[in-house]
Image (spheres, rainbow, N blue to C red):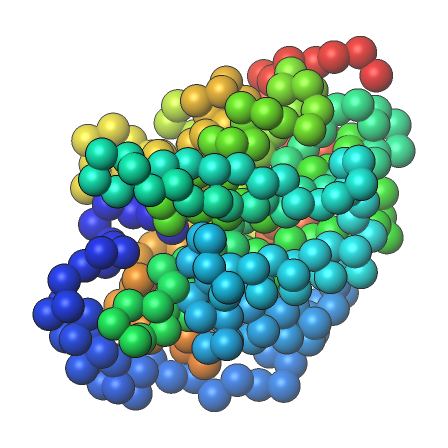
Length: 330
């Protein structure tokens, strides 16, 4: 997640060295021994979820930075998991390449690739809910791997579990699954997606975005976006009443200390006038640090957070007309 207060790519060598120096102390304080299965879920294969998280946040993914070998390796794994979970591509390929410029004078061209597919709805297949998460992270800095287990291997791994549920329990509306690249460089993949979507923009009634859903010892998951989209509040309140985590509305009021409205990929949808919500946890000591590792995740909470996302898909699928998005004919 690209929060402005976070440790950013391009931090000084001194800052990186300090982060590395304290990493052992942080890890020792927050380490949780991973259970073989943190929690059995009746909605999806929780062991597969944790395996996907472990793979995507492993050191050999080299931090999954956009336009790197590590990012390409993570993308190849996601392609495999998309196919196995019943997601179909739009056209012949899941990959949707894009490019952007950055650096001094915007002279450096960076190439990113989104991974996008869909599962057709049973009743109104030309109406869509987008379920999204970014898979990129901060990469290698001064020889240190930033694994990004919570940010955002947790959301990327969850895409396949949500898709597996939808494949087995077909929704009324079609579901687009989108793994975005380049979020850490300014929501680049999401912006490219909404500028050139695989379906008419007006047919997308909702984006449910997952970014950092895997670590919270206080059992709290936040929903961001209600302040600017108050029509969504009743649906979120109904979801909160069913959720197996403490689901809270917040971090979206202008002027508050931590307003996350424009801090993850959901914001690109909001800018395009497509209703969108962001689901995530509050900041933690490991955020944008090399200690954001698989072993420090809150596994039981993570499984329940993914269950909550499945319930969110159910809720918005049943009440898509209430989101305020455009409604093309079936």
